[in-house]
Length: 164
Image 1 (spheres, helix red, strand yellow):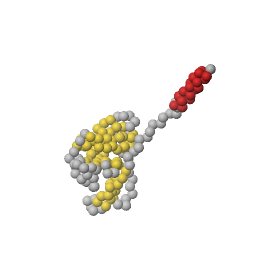
Image 2 (cartoon, one colour):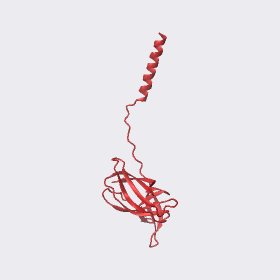
Image 3 (cartoon, one colour):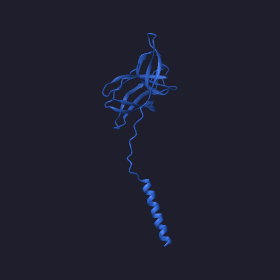
Image 4 (cartoon, one colour):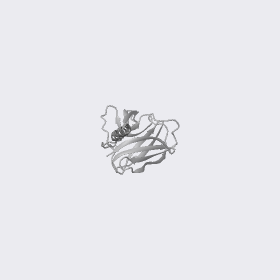
């Protein structure tokens, strides 16, 4: 009798453990965290002071999304799908000038991956960054895009951007 009760208690304990491990909760998809903006102070050609607003990681990798003169109210324009536009990329780090640079974008909803910035060569220092390059970018569909930036074919960093 004692042996049967041990097996019964063990079976009940196993059922309790198994039921605790299962859940009826639905797993919510995590919302991608968009990259933040920051400003770079700049003096324009006419000696007016202002700032560039960049999207990315300060001191690492970013691209310019707006410029304004000092004391101007900043209203950031969204990035729209199917509308090509020009952007200046800024990179911080040693020995980046004259290296190859490209950006591959991935739509976080569809998984679609494509070349967003064709391979180019990074220029010298500019506005406090160690390297820079102008580019044109166009996103085929709206959504959140993860932009993976490569320097000499090695992942340098990434930026999460919302495209309307």
